[in-house]
Length: 461
Image 1: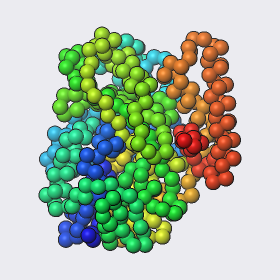
Image 2: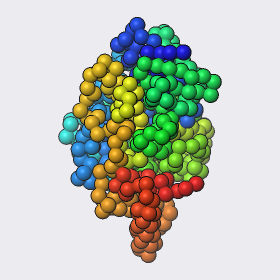
Image 3: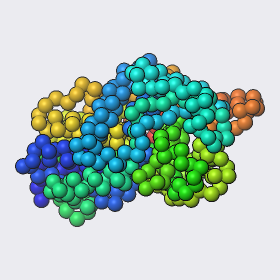
């Protein structure tokens, strides 16, 4: 069958884009290819916070411009979600209106710098409020660990993803957007076709928003390679009345160890609480939960938001999804150099759901033969990957983030100076060995790979 617009991938970016294209071109046919169960979908498994300021990290000089681009796109996306909920009368999927970002006692230097950068950006833009110790004490009534600092991020709301996708799918059905309940296997740019296990579909224009699988759908094409961050989260059936305070805000730390996300607690519409999220990076594949992540989330939740006694009584489920990560850590958004009728939208890592409305607006601009916004320049899927870091900056980032992760996972005794020194030396040796391994690979340049991805790239399994 032939479509005017064919969307490959039915996560938040793909589904929102299908609706946006149908709204702009009501007489055009639109189809979405993707398993309706959305198994492993980063959007469905997300905590679904409107991540803007909470994702700000302390960065090297070369990343300052990149961080400002992220803020600009995130702020637009957040506002567009609010407008969407208002226009469609679906405000009920919003579960709380702001976020409490906190810094606990015993933090690493990496976490402290990220907290300071997050707070500074929010205060600068008048969307942050530093909390007093009395306010902190009332917001953290059961913590076992002292909370040193906290900032309220005004307007950094959360969304219940199960409710969101019920709404999005229903709207697509009402607009007569076709659901193709299969996964894409290969895209042929010359034939403008998408092959699944059962059929071949053609289209006048193709949008690829297939997460970590996006690059692999194109054979023998120079597209920025994709990796995946495997995220694990707990879905707690919140029966304990002591946890009622968690229904009022998102509670989250800043990113604590590079690829690791830290701790966040997000209320869901059904009264449960989402606690996440771990993350480990692999080449695209079907991957399971890392048990250490589950242990860490339970311990961190009990220490920082609940107590051991409350934690002992918790019941619930697990969920996981595959975050799309590009080789150099930057988004992949734009059309193919060889075929301007194919547009890729992936590599957004932890912010894809927040950015979805704004990315879909860029897709509508592309479909209307207009230039996309300037913030998206440099993110072409056919670019030469560039981490934007010097070798010295990459080494510093890797060592500081991995030390922070080791501290967070209690892999050494911070009060034992011998162990501290040994851990620093071990991480630096590991980093230098990874750098040498990358340099020995003739097909990769060190500056093309974000340090978070070094292990995954050098692992040949």
